[in-house]
Image (tube, rainbow, N blue to C red; front, side):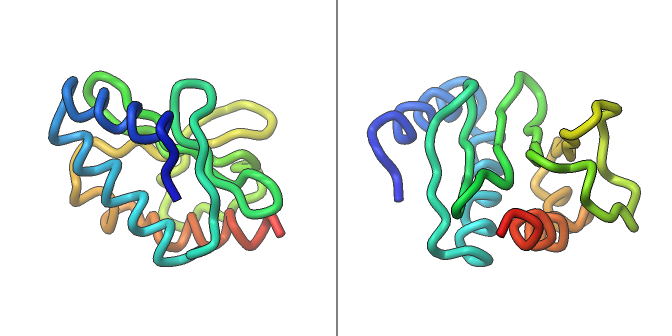
Length: 117
């Protein structure tokens, strides 16, 4: 799953903020539990996940993680957690581990993946 660029990015995140690193790892584990054959690569300073086409990305910032959706405009948002006003992309801001469940990441990731195939 991981290559050297991915491992280096994860090490850098861990050095800068171990708590955010743990959240990134939890989100990665969630993605692979839903889509075991997904690929990941470092792009745009984050991790991009794809099957045949990209469906999401994880980006670590100073005090939060952003889970970006390539075609977020196509996602249903019953929990009102998607952010962004652009034509296509949307994201969910994650500030603590509890946000993974509280912001229903599993449902959004599943829908984003289904929309990408």
